[in-house]
Length: 262
Image 1: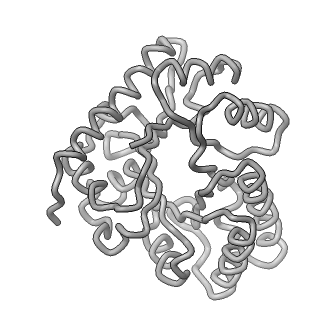
Image 2: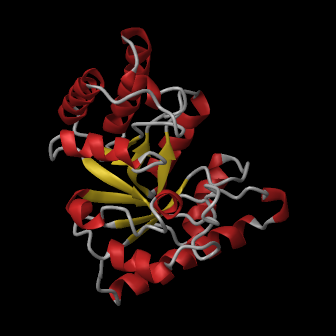
């Protein structure tokens, strides 16, 4: 399997050096977090020229996700931002765009108007050759609502760290129901209390259970590490990346040995 890491993994290293450090650590590619600022575009272009692959672009979510369900003005502002990200993914030939359908524990109520907006967004992405992937968050009911009401063109980004906290150590995540639609993943660890985005094997995730779960996803081709170093001044960047890569190698080995039991 390919092994990727989020490009913004917590160190303030200039993007050229960051890309080289990622390559030296052994990673095959990166995940990008979309932002509308010049240095993001420069860094993304640098990634593509470096030979690193990019499987997914994370669409903006702060001040965006909840507005999908709100009135026309707020929703159109949110959709404009999302369409901009989708256009960028298309231009850079990035196949998947990760989408949040809620933010915080108390998003606006789900509604048919919001669902219709998502259908139109799906149509827009399809025309540009990009697949939308809904990510599981705090409110799994919003995730289910989107996946269950949108057609098979919409896929899933499985976030293991979120499932660890909000789905009873992943046990209540409806894996068997959705495994066939999982095409990308976000891998990070935590203490089951806070969404810490730690390296795998540095928290409470049962790696054997996670491996068994991922082994049941036939369309999953890449293991993507979405960890962020919270105290970069206290850590060596090269060692951090090396540990992250080793964690994915270890997980891949467990996946190869796994059979899933519900």
